[in-house]
Image 1 (cartoon, one colour):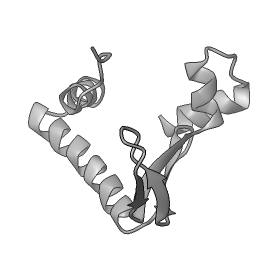
Image 2 (cartoon, rainbow, N blue to C red):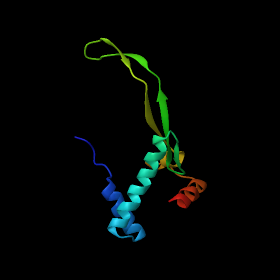
Image 3 (tube, one colour):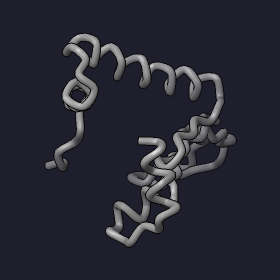
Length: 111
């Protein structure tokens, strides 16, 4: 069983309560932000949100692999993958570490 996840609807609801937009406007705002991130990644751009993290597109070359079930060699096709690197501030928050005053100021300005 997977752990609970934050959904688009929950994000939109949080925006609605925090900013005071209508339910539909909040949903449109969340969708717009996510679509902008997706569009940038689709074109190979990185997306950086200060005090949060960076999404990067990584090009993987074709390589020789192996079918884990049968052991038969197989070629793995080249592909693009997305990497997320959390900022130091986000890492500290997730790990319940103390955050410096400078980090708090940066996080407050961004959030």
